[in-house]
Amino acid sequence: MIAQARHLIWPVLKGNAGIFMGRKIIITCAVTGSIHTPTMSPFLPITGDDIAQASIAAAEAGAAIIHLHARHPETGFPSADPNHFMDFLPKIKGRCDAVLNISTGGSSVMTLDERLAPARAVKPEMCSLNMGSMNFGIFPLKERYTEWKHDWEPKLLDASRGNLFRNTFEDIEVILSELGKTDGARFEFECYDIGHIETLAYYLNKGLVKPPLYVQFVLGVLGGIGASPENLGAMKASADRLLGDTYSFSVLGAGAMQMRLATAGAILGGNVRVGLEDNLTISAGTLARSNAEQVTKIRTILEELGFDIASAGECRELLATKGSGQVAF
Ligand code: KMH
Ligand code: ZN
Image (cartoon, rainbow, N blue to C red; front, side):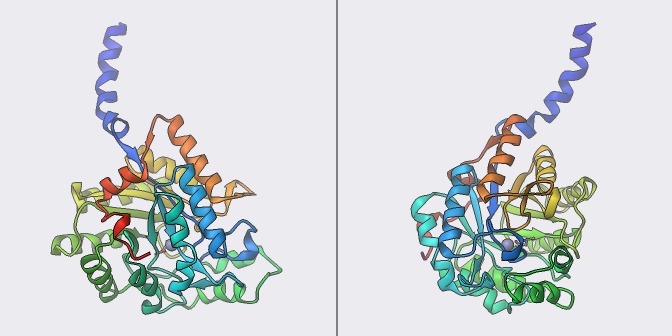
């Protein structure tokens, strides 16, 4: 009887074993971003020193990739000034080995040239590439607060009612050509809906993007696909059909679903992204005291489930980056 049961169960285990065995999960930590504002959390990194310290601690906790935006050090307003990036990049590079991934999304109040200025200047190993234009609604966050540290905060949130997060085909091609082909950056392809995966497949078929692709499934941004396990399954099924074995994926659940969707993504064979850029809490109603706290939490969950975590060196191999010696900082 037992032998028969084992016979039934073993092929199932064996079939799924590839998801667990010999696979290392990449943890990305996005430490500050441009969605949240200083009023929302005293733990949001603002100055160059804050961002450097948060990044180093996140790397020490297990993040192999640090996804980076900058802020004006006095006000916390999102900044695209390369000098603000240079306030933290050399410090982080000097103290840890993580892959430093520069945002090209910046903030939806910036022009494309402003958004690209930091990556053009520092020639990173990796940068983000948003795969379509969309509404990007951060205005609902405004309803949660009555007093603000800075006048710009409610204005920036409100602006997302009328602004477009612009990523046209031309914009995408500029980034692929300048930052990818010429400067050798690998991309975090940020896909907020299935149509964005179709666009990525178009560029794959044209030969303008080169495997191995690293696709970030972004769920839970108002204007993009919602944060549910069903939508995550649909994103993965589409990517499997359109991108085949050319890609690996990571999961970013914006807001309260961050940890659950990241865990679901890992179980489906993916990697994970956490960080205060997309979620300020560590559990329902409790602010995370640091980015490292979120990294430690997801790492603990994943290790408890039997997964191994990728080091920065393993991440570089998996994503075929040019190496930290080839950047301009
Ligand atoms: N915060 C993410 C939902 C970028 O930096 O290029 C969007 C993001 C875009 O990370
Ligand atoms: Zn970002």
